[in-house]
Length: 162
Image (cartoon, rainbow, N blue to C red; front, side):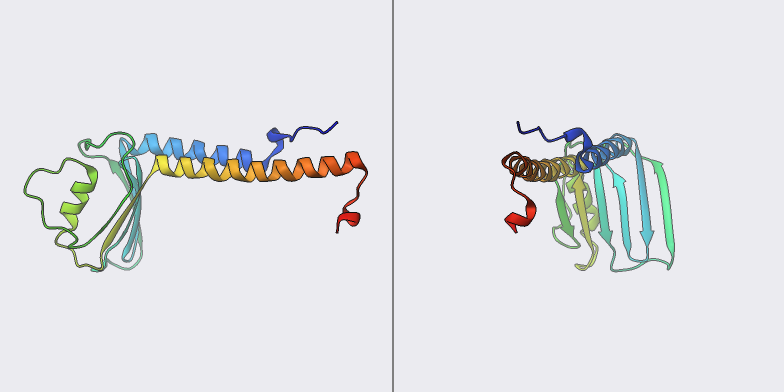
């Protein structure tokens, strides 16, 4: 009889659950607080239901700075915003009031040089990517486990296969 793969002993499973739990906590935290780290021209932060990375071509003071503060008024866009990438001067300043987080960032970037960019990756996308990779790795490992179990039942050694 071929034994079933012991999922509860899989480091991939527990690692993925840990990453998804931490990402879920960061997602909930980012709805009310904004955290960021700035180092030279680079900035990264947790805000508005996602991870934001920015390259500012105008630069900042040398050294590393970190900040955490209460988020300003909630922006529309829902709990699961789409990912986006915005460059400086990529669009003219909007005439009407921004409705989504992407429109707010686009409006803020319209007077920046083209070398400045802003990347936003929502937390839901990180959780889905982690789940897909974990399921793929566990399925691959379970297939190898079943082949190994079948070889043991049939009496085939690894040396005979290689």
